[in-house]
Image 1 (cartoon, rainbow, N blue to C red):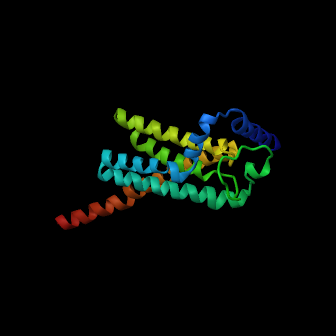
Image 2: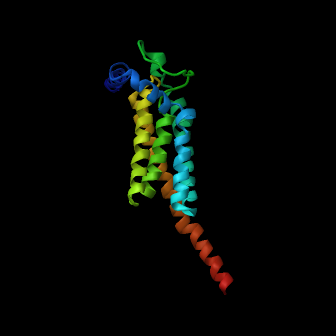
Image 3: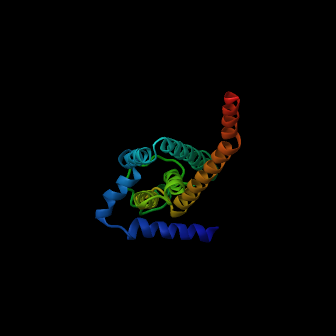
Length: 200
């Protein structure tokens, strides 16, 4: 465990102190602050609604449920359970590019939530036409960029964001499996029985 933590600190310092450039600072701050880059999710929701119509609203609901689950697991379970101090408060010589309240580090809810949205996007759009495939790639790239930004600005270790991404992908998978099972085995059969009764 100590070796893993040492590697995590080493990689954090590499990304936060060495592989940096002043031109990238503003971009990383933009990506990491929800009030700045959060409108990307609104544009994504608009794209989904326009491309898929009524089905698009169901996809958006899938995404919202996935984000709710991933945020709860990352912030509601793992952070109080692990209680890992953020690198900006635990280490010396950290480039802290944003104001950060004292809260726990593991796991990154930013990484979890963006990964959850990217996963749902992949499920419904990766086999679509070219514009939908490009949309999928864009959302995956955005999720990866947000995860990187959390390390770059000094508020998370790489292990935090990697765990967050796993939580996000797992949450989206769980939501998709449960909702589709309920639809096929509970909701849809009930609708079909009601329709057959009304026809009879």
